[in-house]
Length: 192
Image (cartoon, rainbow, N blue to C red; front, top):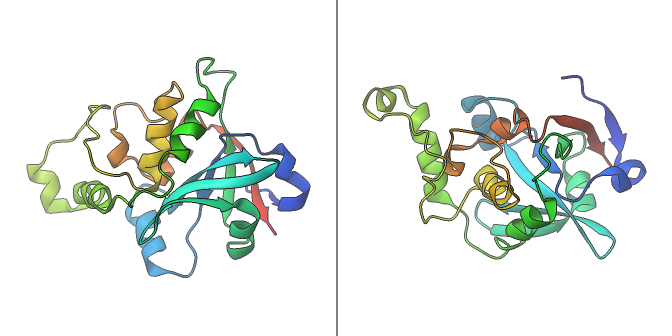
C-alpha cells in the first residue's frame, strides 16, 4: 500500500465518524514487537469519533485503559504514523458507525485488557501452537476487558459487521483490521 501523507488540518473534515485509525510503531520496542511479532505493520488500533464538532480518538491504552483523546493531539505526538481507513458502508449496508462508536465510548474509563493481550500473544509462541488448537469461534471473547484491536473489533460487531471473520475479538490484532473488507478504503496518513 502506498501511503499518502496529508496535513491533519486539511483533511480532518474528510475523516468519517467511525473511521479506523491504525498506528505504526514508533520509538518504543513494545510497539515494534506488537507489529512485527503479529501479522503486519501496525501496533495500535483506534476509532475516530466526532464530538461537538471536534474529532476525537477512542481507544484503550496499556497502563491507562479506555481513552477519549483529541485526535489532533495524537497526530502531533505521532507525526506520519497514523493511517486512516474509512468503513466500507457501500459493501456492508447493515454496518452502523453510530452504534460502533457508541460501543467504543463504553470502554472509556475502563481497565486495559492485559489478559486479552496475553491470550493473543500465546498462539505466536511455536511450542504453544503445537498443543493449543486454533480458535475460530467469533463469539469466544469471554468476559475480560479488551485490548485496542479487540475493542475495535467488538465495537464493529455491535455496529452490525464482524470485521475479521472466524477470529474472536481477543485474537484480533491491529493489522488484521487493516486487511478487513470492512475497512478496505485507505484514505491517508496524518501529519500535524
